[in-house]
Length: 143
Image (tube, rainbow, N blue to C red; front, side):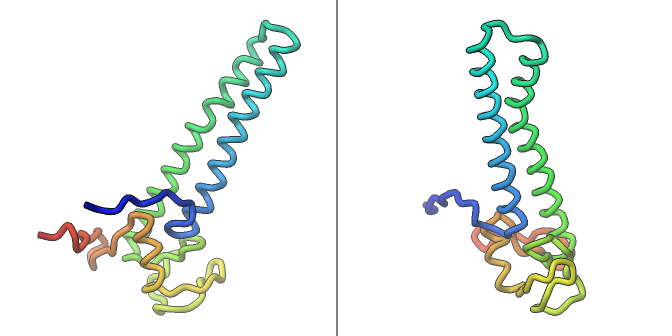
């Protein structure tokens, strides 16, 4: 039986967890703003006008929209990671193909070590890509 992993915003590469923190904070702010706007408006007059109802509805729907946007970002990073053979900067997502195993990212200036960074990519659910750019199966899933 595998151990249950605890959820943490600090697992995986920073390009993903920094963005997930921002989207979560924005989603919570939208919901709290919608609740506050509804409560404030209802206390002044029980009947809401159409634009007030649609504003509150829009703020409540915003977390779902943000979730879709974050999903697209994660799929793009995953595709870039596979295409580059696992050679991506963890901070900005720059493809490090053709550069040394250790060094500084030419895009953002962050230091990288591809072997050490592999742990963070694995924590995010990425696996070591094979030489043809497709994901290789985990050692546990091999027959």
